[in-house]
Amino acid sequence: MGRRKRKRYKKPIRVVKRLPTMFQCPACGQVTLSISIDREKGIAQIVCTNPDCGLRCIVKNVPEIYQPVDVYAKFLDAYAKGELDTFCASKEEEEAPKAAEEAGAVEAVEGEGS
Ligand SMILES: [Zn+2]
Image 1 (cartoon, rainbow, N blue to C red):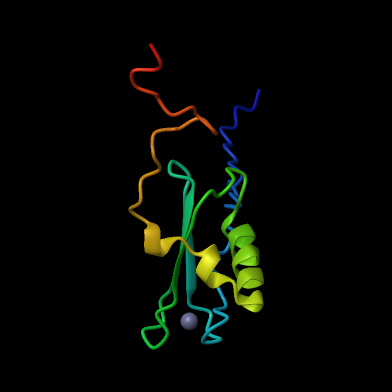
Image 2: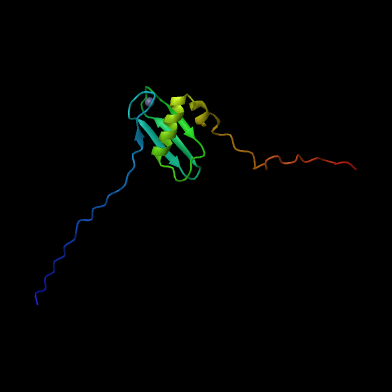
């Protein structure tokens, strides 16, 4: 029987789903806005790579399911409303949240009444 060693490999076409991470910057209008999400920290970093613009923004509490485009949408929204100051957390980036103080934790009363 014909032994044809015909190995026909179909070229594996890998469609790498790459969501865009460059967006149009609302400040300078260039598509130079880079958004990267740090899932471990739950923050997103928005940086305009246009040196003439230099828009920067750190977004905290980014839901895990968020894609850069989602962050971008929120960012644009905040920008349009002029709420970037509250939206961006870059100014207090280093502020570590105090050890989970339970809401309304009773202040330890030392030496409570005898
Ligand atoms: Zn810009």
